[in-house]
Image (cartoon, rainbow, N blue to C red):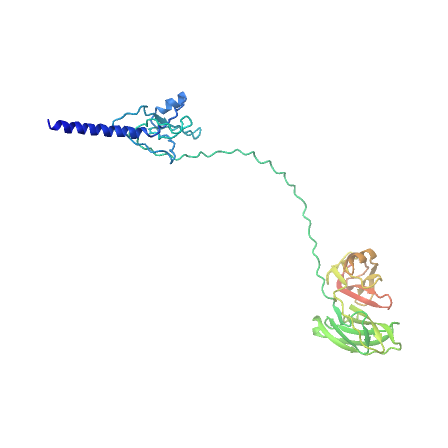
Length: 385
């Protein structure tokens, strides 16, 4: 009899704990589970055990407290999610029993309480990583490019390199005002056995100074010589010309250059600088010692006229006989366009010979005020009938 009160007290205590647990579980909001709307095909596929993707609950969801001895007023429903990644990817579904958390929905009012669903031993399932299916992008084929027709490539014309003249007067420069003696500096290639002739002429062509010198085996090298030239004139000043020429062993002039100066009988020197000393008559064809047939010598090259007088083209034999000659008057328009530069030329010189012989093609130009040649260049050729 003494045990009955103790049993009664234990039962009452147990009932109290059960009631307390019921009250505590009733304070949480129920989780509203939206019913799944499945098509017949999806419902049929959800019956097959497979792996499905389960949506992850948000981190802010309210935790679920499991109760003892109470069954959920609403049955636990299986959530099935079907994932279709493409036409060639099989649909994988998984049926998992999940305990919905107490999450307020649009249909529930704030502050209203409803019994929570107990946890029914739901096994967690891994969320599969969605596989992206590469998409094939079809591009329009590029329009064919137009066919390029071969074009004619122009052949570039090589610009000839014009060198220094065979004779160059470095001092004095053009129109220098000079008193006696004149200090002349000349750079030249005399040639083997060649003779160098230096002359100073007055304005009426009279000879004021002359000197000749012959070079031996060193004649093929360029030499620089200096000369002191004395002169006397009757007037206070007059125009003069300093000429330097080179002759071959036969006495033919093969190169010549000159400079016009102003001669003073008193006063001081007033020199001017020399020019560029380039060859004024540059011969491209024929080349030196070329054989020429058919009675015509075609000459091609560049000229820079040193006066307004005609340019003479001559074929001179070793004895000094003229075998053929032409002359050319430079076009004033071309001279103006060249602005002191070179202009091209091409000229045919007919000749008549009875037997093969060596000769010289001579290009020269004379002065306007003072008589005589002011520039001359030549090359040796072999003429055949």
